[in-house]
Length: 190
Image 1 (cartoon, rainbow, N blue to C red):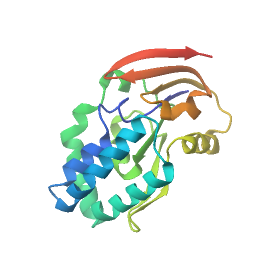
Image 2: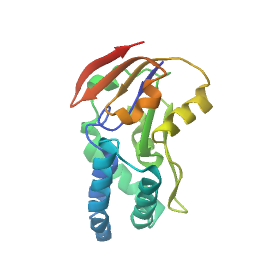
Image 3: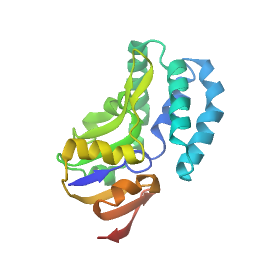
Image 4: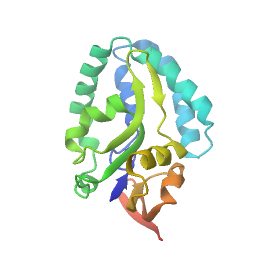
């Protein structure tokens, strides 16, 4: 089994940030949250993020972003029709039906492009669109926890990621590949 991160691995960029920017035309108040989201993203990339603070920031942002869930889902379809080209075809070609995609991106966003991802095994941050808040933050150690809940001690042959935030998953993977700007570099073999 291979496991893939989504943002900056399969999708060239941060899909949540791109979606937030896309949403500005629907809800101008989102602009107020972009500096906070940007700072949180930088901290995330540097592995300096406080998980509790990041969860609070995301939940505050979701309350602004999701006003009408039907409208949000229509906007997601529009977003993917304009951004599908950012999916890395080279990575998509190596994903098989029994592989797993694990991401901190919200379920409502990633499931909007699921048909193109070659697998139904997608583990995301879960969001309750009615309450407009996260119910499970699929980040850091939580990725490992959810993987073990779903797959037990099943072996990960290869992990493809862009970040050391996936260290917990790296530790149980036989081979680890770092993906940067479309280039795949092998980090280690167990």
